[in-house]
Image (tube, rainbow, N blue to C red; front, side):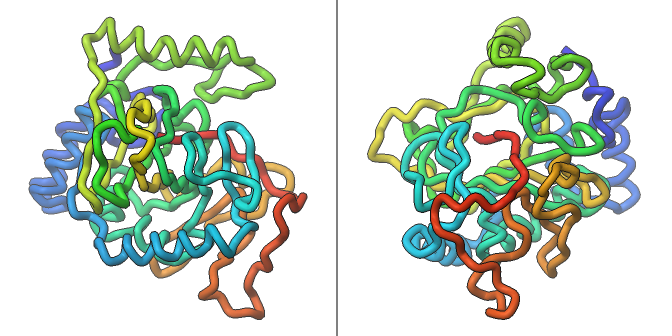
Length: 330
């Protein structure tokens, strides 16, 4: 098990002496005691938890708006397993279904993505302001296998990545809760060819399946056991790009697990989808909340936008050009 992070990572938290660097920042007054505890836990464990980070009234308003959009916005982008669809063609209340980049459709999602405590924690982890570049809204547990986001979510420089998982309701055991291996962000690098990212055509599924099995083998070898996250509404977990995580099986199908995941990179970094042919966005947009981008929407498409500039909804099944997005979930 690596004692420090991957050499692919440009982040200070993955460099030798990161613990000492955190102490220096505390002594210099750059971070306070609470922030020191968060970043120290992140360095050691691969994640940190912030309770009561998102206002409950904001969550309630967001969920009401999302429910309304499920009925009125068939043009929204969704994935069902590996398939990318319009919302009008999808079933949102089943496992492996994710509503994509809702911060491009409602400002309330963007407000959650840059809630003050979350925004500050990411700035400490990255050493600069963060930008959100992928969002995944879940109605129920994902049931996705234990994986590492670095296999799928490609940014430049590589591994300049972190994610936040926000509980939109109290999460119950048996609901398909988030699970992870503590400290797995320090597993040795797993290579797809010469890099860390999986390409289906270049590498095939056998190597990918080997990677998923290898994560469990490494955890067993290093005596790491699966841990489960049962947060209260408004609590969030920020995880390292290499933390091995997934969605537990749904034991009780009557349970929902309403949650949202945001993937971030430093504002100076660049998601790989910016460079794909037909990419709807090729740079981050700035808003008072923070910087954001999407591989599905060319501009903010919410009802708050003035009619003269609003993106017009398209019927389900539209073939509008968009850049493909690697999968990632929890």
